[in-house]
Image (tube, rainbow, N blue to C red; front, side, top):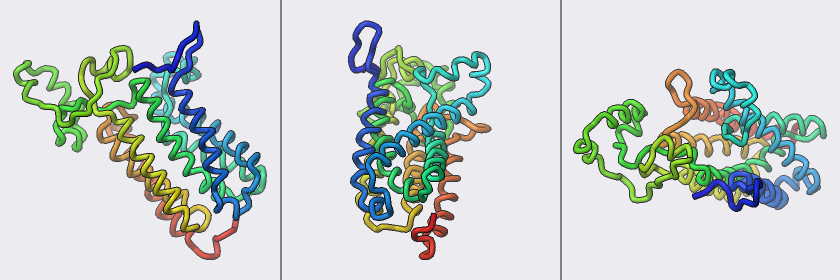
Length: 292
């Protein structure tokens, strides 16, 4: 397992970066096939490409700022490290917020309905999230807890306390904790997962999310999109789908951004649910159909 596909001299093609490039190109292709968006005035492929560029740039900025805000004290030790994105530190919830801001600015600039744009974009976004987690796998990050962690420890959120006590146990006591799944992954020792848990098989949390993101994309794009809801409804459905996925996956993750001892993804996902349910009711009104 290596973070790069190949290396020539000082140049290396990192798998994480490659996933972003593929997601960008495939996303444009998927969006260009959106007949609903076409009916609502998004007919120019150049417009789709421009919008995708705005969305991905604003999304990356949002993802980085969100992460830095939650790790502010660490970055203040060396502020220049804020710019070192290649060292990691992008958060998808920040990416969603940044992408939404970018969509608003693009819609305002070209006098378009922002929700027609976001409805077209959420499918490619979820597919991109499916691809992106393979980049996390290559980097050995976004990893889960050891596979022998008891389920009651995982689901009650007491892993950190349990792990400290586990490490202080005798080998005989540790041997009583058996692997719960056969698909755990032992990550190289030069990766974040390998450094934190050397030689331990871990839940591949990034693959859990990748698989669920793919299912979410298929549901969103080939079921919900065909219903041709009012503009904005599909975007709200995306928030619900990804919120459910992230709450489930974060339960198995060993590292997550925290707020007062609570996982930030839990809190943000719950806010997404509230926003989405209000949005569905609002956008579902018949007189909202083609208003900007």
